[in-house]
Image 1 (cartoon, rainbow, N blue to C red):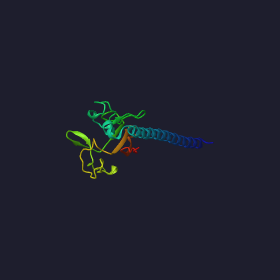
Image 2 (cartoon, helix red, strand yellow):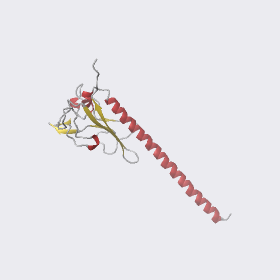
Image 3 (cartoon, one colour):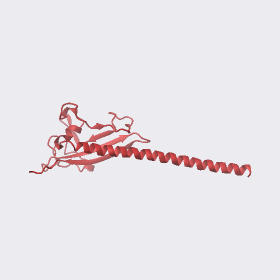
Image 4 (cartoon, helix red, strand yellow):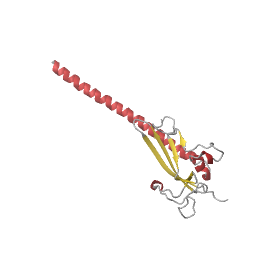
Length: 177
C-alpha cells in the first residue's frame, strides 16, 4: 500500500467515526428529551388526579393563585405552581416552579376570579360554568359546576420545552338513596 492509499483509508475511517459519534450524541439527546417529556406528562396527569380528590366546589380555591381564599386559611392550599422532580425551570421563571395550573380568570373587584366570559377557544370559552343557562357571569368562583383547567409544565432542556393538558372537572353526581 502506498502512503496515499493509507491516508485515504484513515480519512474515510475518521469521517465514519465522526458520523457514528454524532449519531450516538443525537440519540442520547433524544432519549433524554423523551424521558423529560414522560416526566412532565406524568406530573400533569398526577396534578389533575390530585385535583379530582377534592370536593368539586373548592378545587378552584385550592389551586388558584390567591392564597387569601384557601379553604383552610391563608396559604394552606397547594396553589397554582408546582415543581417536578427531574425538571428545571426555564430561565426567567418568576416563581421557580416548572408547573402551573391555570383557570379562565379575569380581574374583578381587585382580585382574579373564575369567569365565564373569558374568550379561550381551546377550552370552548365563553361557556356556562354554573349551570344558569347563560355564559355571561363575570365571577363564578363560588358557584361553578364545571371547572375548565389547563395544567402546563415548562422546563429547561436543550431548548425550552412545554407540555400542556386541558380538561374539565365536573360537579360530582351522587345518586339519591
